[in-house]
Image 1: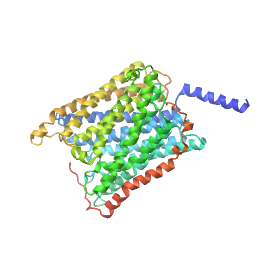
Image 2 (image 1 turned 30 degrees about the vertical axis):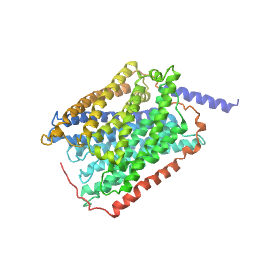
Image 3 (image 1 turned 90 degrees about the horizontal axis):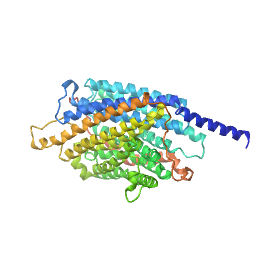
Length: 564
């Protein structure tokens, strides 16, 4: 053995010992802590607003005119749908990039910090008009309702901040590939690449819309093309949902098998699922406009197919996860048809929370297919069913996975430990959250089928008998919302306790090994340039014709309206 080899081995051992002792690079850990702190503060404020909203929707309280239901609804949506999810996703993936790629590059870390402050400043600029009741346009901010231009400027800054983080991730991955020729991108970094590709390309449409609305709201442009704006919004709106989903899926594939003592099903299948979710995602947003006028039947059929195609990688994920769970359960001694289920670590919050999230995705995915189908969509469109579906997919499948991640990620970045007592707190929190969502989302689905509309405050429509029949279900909605705020308070307490007060120690960043070594995965799976080109072709198939039609044969534009 020559001297060079000995030195390399010594250096490698030293790095491993250093990682065991020091954990994550302190500068990278500080970055993720900042992102996580903002995410969970947003959860706290957004959760309180959600409770107020639920109590008024059930007819139990009446919010004052200076802080009305629609203001609360707008702020609740912005804080939870954009701030919580964006900050959590970026903080989580940047921690994983640091762990799997040997640390963030200094310029990438700087870009992430600049992106962080752009998003924080943008959030403040967007929220102030909401508080002043000058931007009560709800999360979807559909024109012709017009907010203060500063609301749209704030949103634009948030998007620019997200783009900076996406470019930073691309630079870090490209640098790693250049230094490691012939090696596969580590699977966690592969997931991160897919998510940031969607974040960048999926937000281009809504960015164009927001800049148009800024000029319109300032009065520099007299009218706006309403249908074009809606179409650009949903090219982002639905993609955003699947960005959260892909983030949750990364933990299902990579983290859950490690926590239960198993292995990842197949590295090749994992990468193909990510590629398919990236390629098929953006055109899926059209099904939100399936009842809009101005869209031809042929176009709607094309987009129905594109939306449903997202279900194929989801079914592949279901197969892979059931395989891993059953195989690991049997390895641990499980017998019989379902005996393996008893061997899974149900008392470990790091498993329990994402497991319930995965179970919830079964009805959530089925509900999504119902809304994608024209005839079924006619029944539930613009009813509370849609809100219930949203809380089942995002509020349960995605957010419960985020909560499960927090119980190992926060101790990992803080060089602390998850204690048995905090684990019990997490289990109780998970059960409370699950019950809350069962009550709230379940009642929303049911009362939506009975015709109760979405986006409106409580009303009996002049004591109409049908509307009065919705009241019992709305009480269940309020019960669910009350349980959820208890879950929010416990979760926020757990996060900041683990960040600052838990016992010092070393926590692992759990990444499961695949059953078959990664070197047997086909090299073509790493060709991100090719997958992005195919994605753009699919997006063009879905969007070029309708966008050209909406621009060339534009309907009369609309001036801004303030309806509140």
